[in-house]
Length: 321
Image (cartoon, rainbow, N blue to C red; front, side):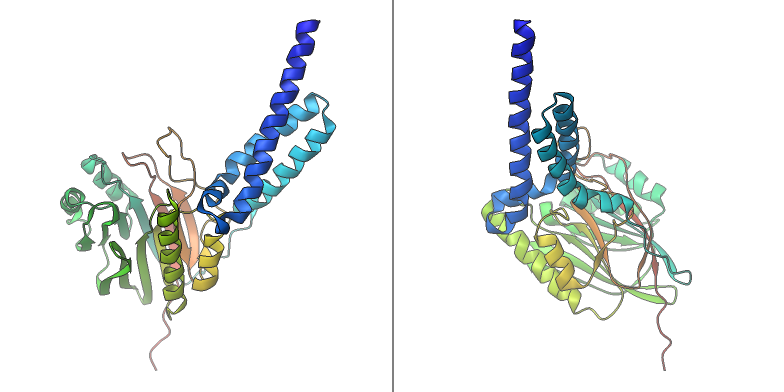
């Protein structure tokens, strides 16, 4: 009996330690604007949710009712941030809009599966493909798509190179700098009788305080620019943040855009070197009037990111007077 008592006591101490760690991480994720390290804690709400589910079940199984209530509260807090993405009703789709399929893919500049990526893009039958982390080698490799996507623009500069391949001709195209060495692809397209601005973005990753500050500045500038856009707008790419960081709702507020994930799930896209997707940092934001018909994460094709595939309907342009 003695070893059973010791095992039970050890289980209770382990449960208490894990529960306290989860509660701390959950709370710190809400104050990320004050220190970049705390902001990192905001990105793992899905993991916190499932770990709280496990500790909640363990607490009640061990008859530790107080710890069970603590873990139940943690489960509810993280669930309130995660579950609406899966359970919220999908916005109504405009029946008279022009269909458009867009793929965004951070190809990872060290990835060498050029043919596999190009084959995947063809299989998606996307109208427009936005690539980030386009190095010079990737810039050359993507030209294999020229027969399918005759309209292309690229700026291959390593980790922050960007390229746009389209079946639809560009009315206008330019690269804007969100900061030094970080271009944003800005295309103007005419989709049938609808006009659309489509911006491909790759913000800085946040592994240090300095880079996190740069990323925040980039996303704030992006939000301000998007807020000034007077036509239907789609912003798509690797924003290097999840929707649970304070900077993401700030971006939505500045830009007057909405997250395309509502009703389609969390859809994690970056694996962090693990064999499964970890956090959702690849995003598609759309303006009012742009309908999201479908949204999905593609398969692994050599990068540490999964491609993002979004089916949209673009509102028809008002006739000229």
